[in-house]
Image (cartoon, rainbow, N blue to C red; front, side, top):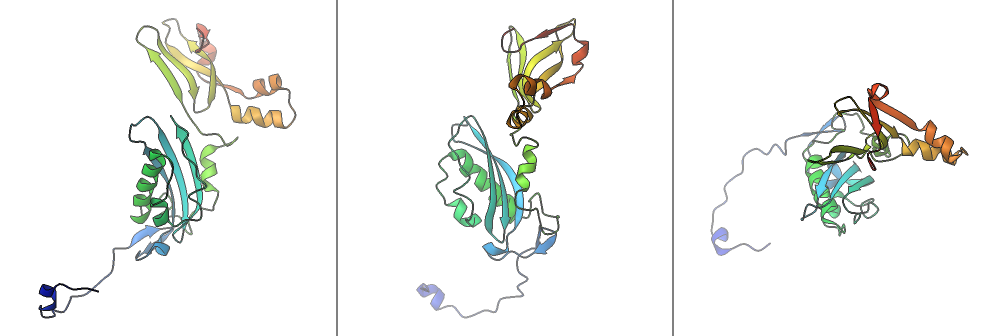
Length: 224
């Protein structure tokens, strides 16, 4: 350790009591985090790229400072991948070439959540099991993504909702959307993999929302 001349000529003064860092909630415990291995937690959040043309939802499950599970969901771009994160400490992950600004930003935001005890599992005893992020995807393990388009001239079109791919929009007498029909693509693929004919699987995976059955007319949002 190198000290300046000014410091070397100072007289020693005793330091007062040291109580350590404030404890943070962490997997059902209160932890005074002093090193990376003290950090555990499950959380997720959003990152965005510098031109703000794409976004990444990143889910991490951290155990004793090491990333044991990572889930990446993207929109607007595809330049991000989770396998570079698993097995790294959260400090290493901050300084890893993550290919894309969006996942880098997401990693930064999640780091702050976890080290300040703001994780989703802060008060869950022993945290969440590795694999817990897949529960966010639901049956069929597909991301829940909504896609809606609208113009001033022709109004809105629901193309894909959280439930699935929209096949028909239901309109009332005033041409207002009152419901929609959708196909859960995850379920449809599961039916096909089990041996169902594609047409049969499609019908079995259909559902509807709102006052779909009371519509004045139906439109295909991609053609009509």
